Amino acid sequence: MVDSALLVEFNNMALMQSWRWYGPNDIVSLSDIEQSGAYGIVHALHHVPVGEVWTVEEIQKRQRIIEWNEETQQPRNLKWAVVESLNVHEAIKKGLPERDQLIEDYKTSLQNLAKCGIKIVCYNFMPVLDWTRTDLTFTYKDGSKALRYDAIALAAFDIHILEREDAKADYTEDRQIEASSYFNCITDEEKALLTKNILQGVPGSGDVFTIEDYKKQLAEYDHISEEILRENLSYFLRSVVPTAEELGMKLCCHPDDPPTAIFGLPRIVSTETDLLALTQTIDSPANGITYCTGSLGPLPENDLPGIIERLGHKIHFVHLRNVQREGNGSFHEADHLNGSVDMYAVMKALVLESQRRKSEGRDDFEIPFRPDHGHQMLDDLNKKVTFHGYSAIGRLRGLAELRGLELGITHNINS
Ligand code: DNO
Image (tube, rainbow, N blue to C red; front, side, top):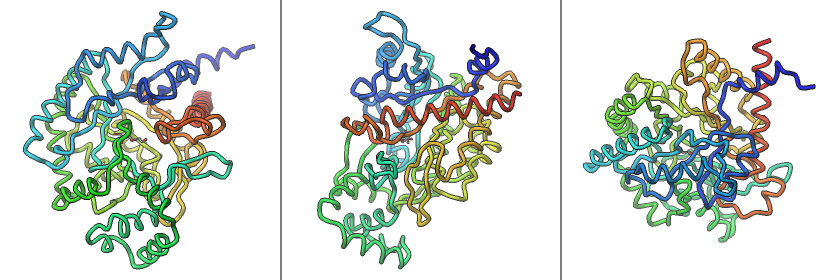
C-alpha cells in the first residue's frame, strides 16, 4: 500500500527538479526529460548570438516546443522555468563604450522574457571562457567518463602551448617544473586534445577558439584588473537590476568555474566574499546568485552549507554536482553524492531555506535545482557526445539520488 503521508511529502518537495535542455539538437529529448521526472526546463536561445535581443516570437516558439507535445497533441509536463544563460556580452565585461546599448538590449530581452512568464535568469561574469576543463573523458574508477581539471596540465598549456607572455609569473617554481615535465611527456595528439578541451567556447555554441583568437581575447583583458571587472559588473547590475525588479524577475550570477584565476584573467565570483559583494552592489530580490556546488567546491575554504545559511535568501537557482579535490589544485567531477562536497549538508540547508521562505509566505520557495553534469555511463558511452557533462543516464542517476536525498531529509525534518 502507498504511504499517503509520504506521497503528500513528495508533492511538497522543496526544490523544483529541473534539467538543462540545449534545444532540438540535444540528443536528450524532451520526452526523455519527462521520463526523468524533472519538470522544470533550463534553457537558452543558443542560436541567438550573444548581445542580440531575444524577441517575444523566438521565446514563445521555444516555449511551445518545450511545453507542447506535437506528436501526442497534449501538453507536456514541462515548463521553461529558468534561462541559462542570458549571456553578458564581452564588451560589457570589458566596459567598452558600446556597453550602454548592449545593456539596453539586455533589458529588452528581460522584458520579453517577462512577457512570456519566464522570470529566473542565470548569467555569469567570467571573462572570455565559460567553465574550463583539461580532460572531458576522464575514466572514472567504475569505467564511466567524467570531466577533470588538471591544474598541472593547465599550467603546461599556458606556458608551453599558449606561450602566454609572463605566464610563468603566475605559477610557483615547483608548478613550473611539474608543467614542463608534463609537457615533455605528452604526445602531439595529446597536446592537440588538451588545447581543444581548454578552448571550448560558450556552452551550447559548439565553437572552439583557436590559439590565435584566444590570445587576442586575452590581450584585451591586459589592463583589466579585478577592481575594474568588479566595477564593470556593478555598472551592469546598477542598470539591469532595477528593470528586473520592476518586472518581478530574478537575476542570478553563476560562480566562476574553476574558482581561481586562470590565464591571468581576473575572476570576481569565486568565493563567499565575492558573492556577498555582488549581492550588496544593489540589495534587491532581483540581484541574486546561482548556487553551484561544482563551481564553488574546488576551493576547500568555500563553506558550502554555510553559504546557504548566510546567503540563502539570495539564491534563485541551484546546480548540484560533486567534485573530488585532488589536493594540488586539480579536481574531477565525482558522483553526485560522493566527493569533497557534503551533499547531505548542502541539501539539508536548501530544504531549510525553502521551508523558511514558505513559512514567510514567499512564493519563491520552490527553488529550481538541476543535476549539473553527470558521468557518461551505461548507454551514454555508446552515444556521440553533443554537450560534455550533459549525458542522459549520468544526469538521471544524479537527479534520482538528489531527489531521494531531498525526500529523506524533508521526511526527517517534518517527522
Ligand atoms: C556548466 C554550467 C555553466 C553555466 C554558465 C552560467 O556546465 O554550469 O556553463 O551554465 O556559466 O552562465
